[in-house]
Length: 85
Image 1 (cartoon, rainbow, N blue to C red):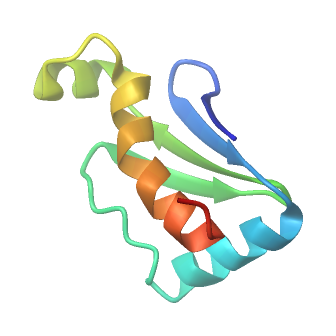
Image 2 (tube, rainbow, N blue to C red; image 1 turned 90 degrees about the horizontal axis):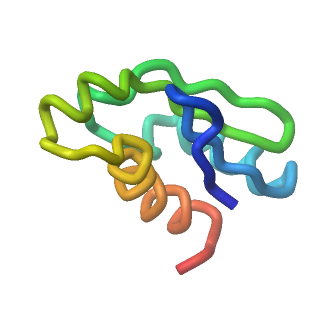
């Protein structure tokens, strides 16, 4: 499950084994979400969270839904690593 977690965070929640795999791919630099709007990436046992600046996204991407923009960036990458389509 991926969701907006407040105004500046997108969080992907999944089983610990899936998050462990995503973290391993991230550490190997095989998980590449190359976008200047995504800042810090934080892992916990069951989540991975992506921090972003919503005002920057709105201004630079001409959108009023910055969370939806970030979700559209990270979801395909996370789904491919987690085995979901």
